[in-house]
Every structure is written in C-alpha cells, then in structure tokens.
Length: 507
Image 1 (cartoon, one colour):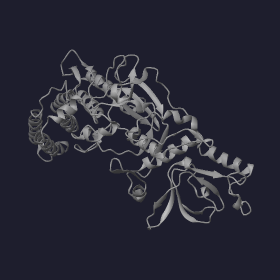
Image 2 (cartoon, one colour):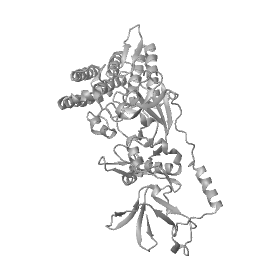
Image 3 (cartoon, helix red, strand yellow):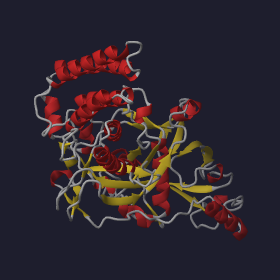
Image 4 (cartoon, one colour):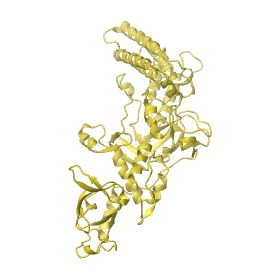
C-alpha cells in the first residue's frame, strides 16, 4: 500500500495485490505507474482507495517513457533507473538463492494420453496396460508453496493472517494457498510462454476477462481471479508420507487428518478425474508428484484419483459439485442407500471396539491371559455385529468402517501377542479379513496351507494398509511361517512404493 497522486494532484490510497515484486521497493517516492481500469474500493476506515488485483493492470514507467505526463518532467527523479552494477549484483543474489530454476515439468508420460472424457472434460487415459505398483508418470510442480508454520502453535498468528476467501464456496483457506496464487501470478507474468500450460485447466463457472493471457504493452494480461479459481479446483495438498510406524502409535488414533503442510499445481496431473474407487495414487517427494497404479489397468482406461476423504459418508455430492459432475460410483450409491440409523450404529460399535482395543494393546491390564481372551472375544463379537450392517458384498463396495475395526484389531493382537502363538494366529485371521474388506482377492494365506500367500487382485488403497501388511508379516514370523512372512513383506513393499513413491527406504 502507498499514497499516490495523479497529474491533477488528487491523492488516493493505492493497494496492489499479486505483484511480481512484493517488496517496499515496488512503490518508491517519485515512481510512476499507469493503472488500467481503475476502481475505488471502500477501506476498513470508511474511506476510499484504489485497488489493483491483476498484476497486468499496473504498468510501471521509467523517466524517459513518452507516457509520463509532461507536468511531471521537471520534478522527476526517476529512482527506478539503476546502474548495470546494481542489476549484476542483484542477479547474482537471485542465482545464489536459487530463484532461477529450470522449467522441468513432465518426466514420464509415455504410457498416458490426454483426451476428452465425456462431459467431464479432458482426462488421462492409458496407452498400454499397467500393473499394480507400476509408475505411470512423475511431474515437477508448476508452482509449489511450503507453509512452514503448519501445525505449530508458534506460527498461529501467521496462519490466521494468511487467508484466501472464496466467495463462491462461502469458505476461506489458510496456509500455503494464498501464497501459491501470488507465486503463480508472478511466474506467468514473467514467463508469458508458460500461460498455455494453465489456460485450459478447469475453472468452474468463472468467465475469464476477455483477452486473458494476450500480450498487451509487451506483457501478458493476467486475470488473478481466474488463477484463483484454477488453483482452488486443480491444486494438490501434499500430506506427510505415511511410513510403517503405526505400530508405535496407540490403537484407535485417527490417522486421516487432512493436514497439508504444502500445496502445489501440477498441470498434467490436474487432468486426472475423480473416482471414489480410483485406480491411481499420488505421492510426493518435495515438489515432485509420483503417480502409481493401485490396480491392474487395461489399455485405453481412464486414470482416476480420489479428490476427497472417503471416510465422510456425505463427502461427495456436497463438494464435488465444484468440479461440475455428480459422483455415481458404487460407494456413493451405497452411501445414499445407507440410513442414518445404520451409520450411527457403525459409529457406536466402532467406538466401543476402540475402547476394548486400547485395553488389549496393554495386554489386558492386570487381567492376565483370561482377561486377554475375554477382550478378544468381545472385540470379535462387536466386529461380527458391525458386519451384519452391510448388505452389498465386498467385491462390489469396500467396507471402510469395518476395515478400520479389523485393521486395528489385527495391530492390537500383534502388539499383545509377542511370543504368543495363539494371538499371532488370530492376528493373521483378522488381518486377512481386514484386507478383504477393501476388496482384496487373496488366495490362502492361512497357516498350514500349501498355496502360500498370493494376492490375485489388489483392492482399495486405504490409510493404514501398510501397517496391516507389517502386522501380518510380524504375526507370520511369530508362528514360524517365514515363507508367508516374506510374501507379506513383499506386499508391504509394494504398498510402501505406492504410498511413498519409492521403495529404496523400505525397511
């Protein structure tokens, strides 16, 4: 913000947003600029000021520019005209701080093709068959912002002050997203050749300014409101990687919190459409997105990911309207036909189960072996009662609430059963049930079977799946079934590779 005057000596407060250089040097005393399509906005103190939202609506002039009003020629000091040594020193500073980066966006997209996907716009399709765990493509972020204050109480003031208000959705966002919008504006304004990468991305019902991205006065026309809508509908939140450490956490701790310490725009990946029963999974290493298959995918099939949290039964139709389509997958259809009474019953049974599992993870307190057996029996009864609330088979719809119960039960049994073969055997039984709740098709895996452990079809990729495979591996080792343990470890490694993008750090 700064106080400015026009050639008639009328004084205004000027507010500039999304400028290329958001520093104190942008509005120096004696500097001159042209404001295109100026308008007055009511300020917080009840007065009026000039506001500029689009970076291309502010044109900064040098002293010798013919557009400088003649009445200012005699008093102009032109502080913007710097020496060659000044710019040389400043350029070296940018290079040292790595503010000049090569534009490497897409690394491997040979097996995919962008084409029309019915009424949903352009989507990604396979050009060859891929297997579960296969790498489909990697992409460097077009724009990326990391919010260091996320999740720390010390930076809470920073979080509350850095807000993006979306009047269309009647909501606001704190953290990295407002910063990302400004970064995107600057990048496109400095590099007009890159505008083609974002101009075709979905922007909802917003109608861009006429001539957006056209070159006017030697610079591109940048519609900041358009870029805001593009980011709101196309950016990806980067969650912390989920590593195989859940066994160290108390059973029942919610591992589905939507904490995004960083945010980015990946223009190629933005073409992936939503499906609750998706066939691809995104992981991140820094600002690199890695997309792997979570199912065997045939040729000419569309690649889909999940946009929203699947554990919220009302998740899809309320929010997915922003992307101009309604989700009609088997999971959403099942949600629509599941009564609130049944949902409440599952929740109640789940809460009761978690109480028992907390006791079980402490080896039954002072209850001894008999107490542990009683906790196992009661937990099994609750899961059997929960299972009766489902109608459709797991081959059609994953049973997510039941999956969480069986998964945590298997982990609790593994923690409790160190050295106890009976508890390890029960953990194997429960762990396999948990995976089958996710539509896994698993051949055998039972103790004493000659068929070993063979995954015929991978199922739904859910949070905590890696922990389940580690539990199975541990339980197999406890029973002396080392070949089955190796097979479970192999499956855990595939899951690790999908969820973290690589398997080199798997231990």
